[in-house]
Length: 297
Image (tube, rainbow, N blue to C red):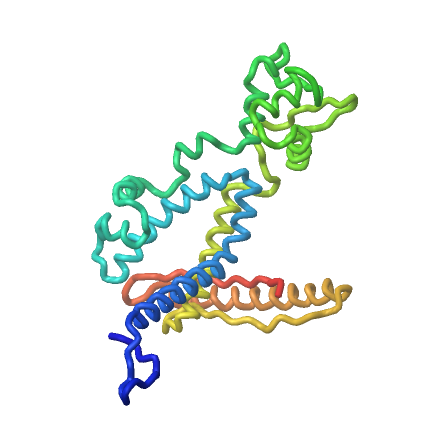
């Protein structure tokens, strides 16, 4: 089909060849732009996860390999739930993910994980610390990492950093490792190793799993509410307000007190429900949870 340009020649409307193709291209570009904008908007939810990965020393290549595996596994579940069959083919998964079917087949053989090729590279700071704990040049007579002068020829921290962490200056590396608490600066410009790897105080496998579970529940609740699903979990919020900065601690205490009282009351009511109706006619049970959190508007 052609689009008319509205001009008149001899009493007839004149078609402008190629206009439909131009309009179609514009429509496709607009759809692509809208899709990219929505993806970018959704990625805001991933920003805290990126910060967590940085604290854990997870590199971008490691995170990308983990995401690719998760993307492929989740895509197969997504296709199956939408009529793609109980076990969608590798070709169908490759089509929706953009991952070659040979890699799809390989990724589906095991649960999502960081690819070994990526994992071996590891975090650069960790490689430096491991060398400090294993390279005989940097060990004392008892096999422990020796205290090193900050500068000078090997064995020194400067030489260690230039060998195992080329790029940033040794001074920048030292400050970052000191901030992470894995090295200690001593008098007379000497440095002591305190840990063979970067660890974050307060973070362990158990509470990180809790972060993952709670975050997943919140996103799934928001998605269900957005789609207007009939059985979507409840979601509501109060509008954000602006308060005087010096009053913020008082308002936060009010939020804390009210939310705690609400959760305690609800917990007692739900416990009563569980005692009164321990089983169902079908014999099946469902898991329900309520989480309250304070957001920064």
